[in-house]
Amino acid sequence: MKALEGVRILDMTHVQSGPTCTQLLAWFGADVIKVERPGTGDITRQQLRDIKDVDSLYFTMLNANKRSITLDTKTDEGKAIFTKLIETCDVLVENFAPGALDRMGFTWERIHTINPRIIYASIKGFGAGPYFDCKVYENVAQCTGGSASTTGFDDGPPMVTASQIGDSGTGLNAALGIVTALFHREKSGRGQRVECAMQDGVLNLCRVKLRDQQRLQRGPLKEYPQFPNGEFGTSVPRAGHASGGGQPGWMVRCAPGGPDDYIYVIIQPQGWAPLMETIGRPELITAPHWATPEARLSKLDQCFEIVEAWTLTKTKFEVMEIFNQHDIPCGPILSMEELAAEQTLRATGTVVEVDHPKRGKYLTVGNPIKLSDSPTEVKRSPLLGEHTEEILKDVVGYTDSQIKAAREAGAL
Ligand code: COA
Image (cartoon, rainbow, N blue to C red; front, side, top):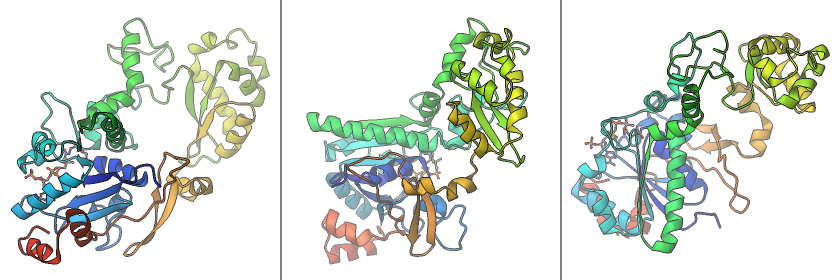
């Protein structure tokens, strides 16, 4: 039995943030019923297509293990079916633009009246406030949540990151909110509202930068590359590759010098001696101007130049192997090509090959959370409306003639 077996999710999500959440719940065993608009479905089915008329990888990689029903929830018959789904489901999740479900007539009050045990989770760009009504995509959240202003180099513009911290990150928050509310329902018997804002999710992940904002009021941020020669303003500057933690780190080049031939190296206080020994600079282990973290703080750029002079003679994988023999934390820059081919990730189920009836085989990222008693089996995403009749019969309790009537009424 899977961890969330018996939990039924009414999935009104689209694009990335919401689907990330419901895909995770499906991997844990929940029955996820994805409600999609007849004809088009989730917009991502058609976005960034690599094969004509076939669901895109964008869609297939965010909607595994779900069932799909097409339902126009703006028609009377569609609303009647939707109401029955609310009655039987444990959780409703949506990430439409603010107010979309309300405009269909399904406010929290109404949903809670229809089913007092249901948990209603929403993802929006912003929490309550002047921006609440705004539509938001990933990079908008990165810009408004503090990530962009603190990413990049001091002499360059704010930068967005490729990690989908606003979308997938907030989807993870929503999933945690849902299982927490399910746990609470065990005791209270009541469902509750779960609200996750993408701005909040990004800021939560940028916690260390709000830490630095407050430290800045008491003096320069000594581990930042701006120290000691650059200027600090009143706000946390972009710190390039500097580590967000208490230990200095930087990205250094490796052989043979390709676009991804870099390794990130961290210098712990206890790592200085083995690092200098390894790269052939033992004289710096005890030299007064280099020996302590405090002595090195004002010349971290020179420290990493010294390290780079050696890493340039090795590949990133050789550096990884040699440094780890001495417990020196480091991370080779792995390209997507390398990650896709990485067999250890296949073995753990983090990268999974899935077979799709129209697309054939494709790779997806599996469940990053491993439960010993509830292993994840990644199943392909559903075709648009693939389970419409099955859900209407088994979940809604409709007969063939009721399904026919709903179809004729344009609800399906
Ligand atoms: N039947 C009938 N209508 C449906 C439907 C269905 N099954 N499913 C969706 N719709 C309707 C909605 O009710 C809405 O109609 P309305 O505008 O008349 O109320 C409409 O489809 C489109 O929804 P919307 O959310 O406005 O889509 P969009 O493509 O314009 O905007 C986002 C997309 C992502 C910007 C927006 O949904 C949003 O801001 N979401 C919240 C934040 C978020 O999750 N962003 C990240 C996405 S990865």
